[in-house]
Length: 116
Image (cartoon, rainbow, N blue to C red; front, side):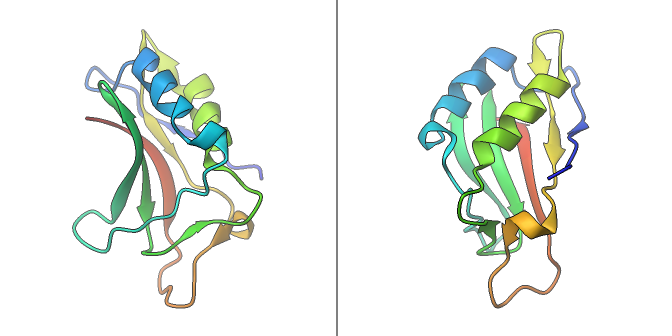
């Protein structure tokens, strides 16, 4: 997967230290980050700590393929996008790593940091 994060760190971004703690909650990084919200923003928080939420947004029911874990993607974003003790941004994994499910219409799947 050659996906690159889109960094959007600003004064309103969560603290890096909080995102590090939230990342530790992702089942040791082995979570597939299933999007299970079919209302509103179509985003589901996978883990949260302090100012930081780790969200998956996109098609209802979409998740990463077996053996592909979202913790690695969040760590990539954390490494690339932190600035001044804050971190913000998103990453859209390559389609080959996503299981969209049978009812997918738009093939949208994004992992992102957000402020809680």
